[in-house]
Image (cartoon, rainbow, N blue to C red; front, top):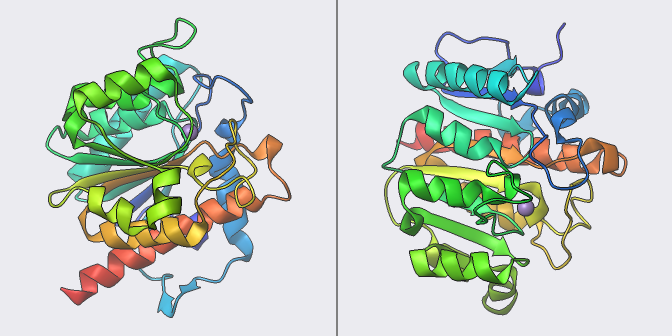
Length: 282
Ligand SMILES: [Mn+2]
């Protein structure tokens, strides 16, 4: 049997969620290795139960399509686009495993939607115009998306590390920002206030939004981060409106006992649970 995410089949005729690995990490700025995350996340599910909070996930219409080709950036972009277009045209929600954060604007662009909001859970702003001459750097991702959906339709939650100039630009353009410090002071309700009120949402989870105590295996860890149950709450609130999602920046070579891949796998499973419990409630 082939190793798929949480034992889901490699294809499902009526899939509503399509898992896809996007193993590209050459737009990282430090500690490469997130290209190994999709397979590491799949491995983590091999010992996991398929019942989450009382909901059996096993027979839900979910598929794991394997990994995008990642020989180089051009081939990666083309294959990712082709596969995301196919997922969306079949009426399924892409659930992408990165890779570094530069894959996110590629997924959003491939979805062909400029009418959605982007919610990013991230320790970092990722609003640089370029980094070390690379305009595709993972630190430019929200900046690139602002050109697709509009800066005012982007919300960044859990932020706690940013360059002064890029922050000024993000504020000027109207990006919605909730720092980790805001949440420490005012609780998760401060984050809830800044979520888009209506419409379809693309959710991107940079694993470094979590405190390194929970998610040590990432390229640029930042202390003072969020807790897993807080991230789960945000997934729960947004899940009925999520049209695309990714989890990025898990870096297995610097992980400790695979903990970060396990957490990533759990967050993905919690999204699947939440998404289908909402569907069956309507
Ligand atoms: Mn980050």
